[in-house]
Image 1 (tube, helix red, strand yellow):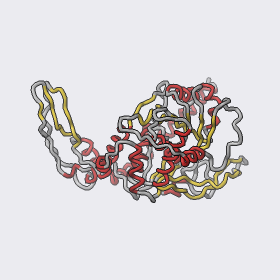
Image 2 (tube, rainbow, N blue to C red):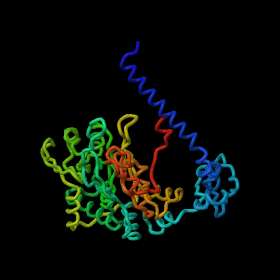
Image 3 (cartoon, one colour):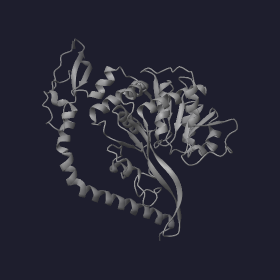
Image 4 (cartoon, helix red, strand yellow):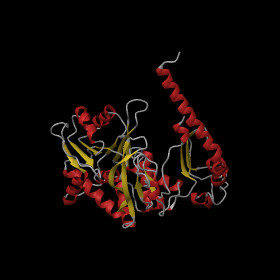
Amino acid sequence: MLYIGDMDGLGIKVALGALRALALLYDVLTFPVYVVLQRPWRLRQLSRRVKGVIVEMETEKSKDVSIDVKGNDSTNFKNHFRDPPCKVEKARPIQQDCKSITYRSSSQPKELHIALVREKIDTMAKMLDYVSKKYPNKRCLGTREILAEEDEVQPNGRVFKKYDMGDYRWKTFSEVNILATNFGKGLRELGNPPGQNIVIFAETRAEWMIAAHGIFKQNIPLVTIYATLGDEAIAHGINETEVTTVITSFDLLPKFKKILALTPMVKTLIYMEDQLKKLENTDGYKEGIEILKFGDVLKKGAESKIVALPPKGDDVAIIMYTSGSTGVPKGVILLQKNLIATLKGFCDSTSIYANDVMIGFLPLAHVFELLVESVCLLAGVPIGYSGALTMIDSSSKIKKGSKGDATVLRPTVLTAVPVSIIFS
């Protein structure tokens, strides 16, 4: 005899099985195309090549600084898909009495990596200053304009809210740098000194990136928390980092009516405005809490005479909280130089060009999206922001006959999670 609970579980299993079958069918149908375009045998050769060469080996008796492994110019990543992988001599075996080994990459650094070293860029603040001078008038961060929200009657009589959307509105690299500078100074005016942690709890959008760089410019550690976490997990991250100021969005702001009761140190909420809706009142929020618009902070910063105190490479850039899938979310500390070192690695291993366009939609609270977008900024690549509700023509918030964000933006770069992870 089947109970309702069993039926629900059975239905879920059937649905997951159907999705796995569709994923398998998709793999089978697209595999020949993948083989022709991606040439996986070459990727396999590349993955098996010698990637590091010994430049120093210290033993109990001596220090050998000779280089045993040599490559040729074809080790440069930009040649990998044009020329066959280089033939590399076999490295000598590591001696048993070896105390330490120093390696260097067998691949040559790319132009962006070289530029970071040449310009002595070791912080995110220096990186944004550099690209804003290199691409001052080029498109940088874009947001799709929402003209109106309308009721759309479905064939079954139900009414759904849909967006009537316009084009992307862009800020140039120079404008983004100015906005970030003003936002950081505005935070200082509100009583946030260098070294005092600040939380960003918001969806991926242009204001998120502007706020982050404003925080970086003032040597304020940025605490990132996933917008999808529950109240207790959010409060845990805020309390553990002793935050007094939280930056959030208009849509997520109401969550703090409950969260503020769990976070006694929070004194200020800054929210990124909605294009259509306004905050009518602050009823239900804890008494004494200061609630400010993102634009108000920008205005304070624009009028401020505060001198920026930029970070150094060894200063904390981010305390990035995990999703909490294995328990309580944990904060991971990343230094400014850690982020720049990762950018160098991205630049060397990935081909991104200034005429590319990126669509940003994965959580910026995750290091993957944050660093990919940062590499795009470094390369002068415009980033247009999107979300699940408006990304494609059939997304739930797109008005019938209108175009989704991807159709309008026509991106060439995006971040994605492998389907095998989703259905594993």
